[in-house]
Image 1 (cartoon, rainbow, N blue to C red):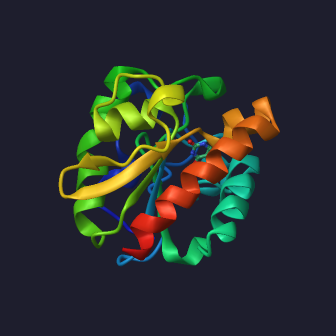
Image 2: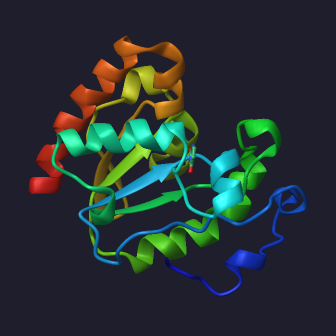
Length: 179
Ligand code: URA
């Protein structure tokens, strides 16, 4: 678990009032892949680890199909505290968390990025287009390459059609991880 000074007691935004725990992120400092979600959900808020609920189960099942285990991934979110009732994080919450996120990215090795959903894609790649447009395209964030795909929670709601699109995107991602 990566610890950044002050992160676990952060009060930079109002999510500090409702969270149970700050979900900092976890994984090796020299990962094969950096996985970036939106914000913790209920299970993550309780346990302090990102992507441990149903979304995470689907995500890591799909990543295992391209030969990646969770142990080789650094996993985090653009917002480190759970929004009430899992609402979408507000732009000011994403902005308040950005210094933590940037410091985290700077502290892990030069692995490609897998970004999940439109909110995280906007924060990481500055993309304003919908995830239906940008998913699977190789994009650049600073010195790193990566791509955005659908959030696994959206795939759980929408079903096999979206899971199939995620599989296609992860096949492209695989070419970056191998490079
Ligand atoms: N959804 C996210 O975006 N992140 C998590 O950690 C869990 C669910």
